[in-house]
Image 1 (tube, rainbow, N blue to C red):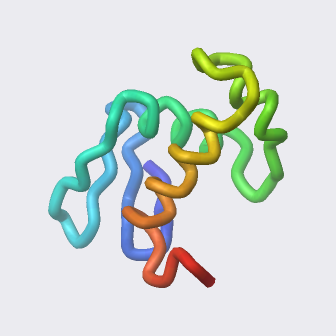
Image 2 (tube, rainbow, N blue to C red; image 1 turned 120 degrees about the vertical axis):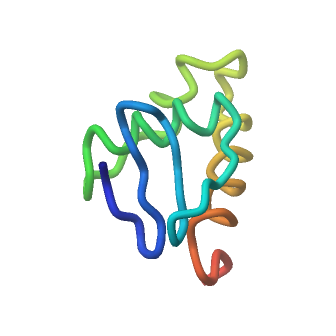
Length: 78
């Protein structure tokens, strides 16, 4: 598992929890978070992430990242 601030992500199960309570992830969010967790502290090109989605422009990845930030970060706008 990986700690993300107040959250814990179980890579094997693709499950996110905050303070022991489950945080609902879409399948796409879980896949994206798992992929980012494979290379912690390293940037990943958004078009590389988009290659595995239905939208190769990267727009779907942008939306998923925004949603994940809302779920994980205390202040997602900072």
